[in-house]
Length: 124
Image (cartoon, rainbow, N blue to C red; front, side):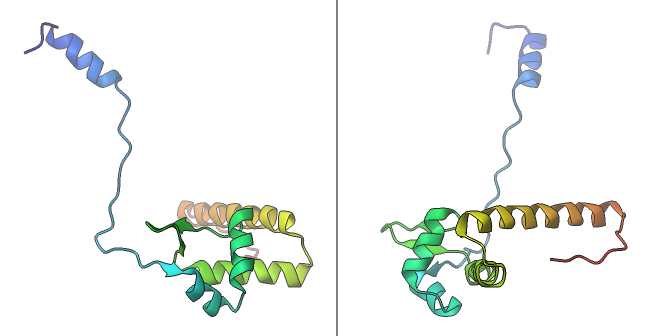
């Protein structure tokens, strides 16, 4: 038992920062290999490595050090390719546009949750 009074222990426990909430997947999320993503997206693996290095596509490393991707990676690659070919953007610009599009999506979702709707249809 501690020598500190009960009030002091309660005050210190109230002042302690809230613990971060950790979530665990019940079912493991399948990961895609670099070759699988390249085949599904129709892109050369070296270009995917470049996109990962530039931060345009999210990837992780497995235990053996190989790149592994979320199942949504082929769609993200297609988005990058559409911006590159459709708008003739360089890779730095694509990163900025992707960030802005993601921010717009978050703001539109917040508006929908709040019950406020825009009369203008989403352009993304």
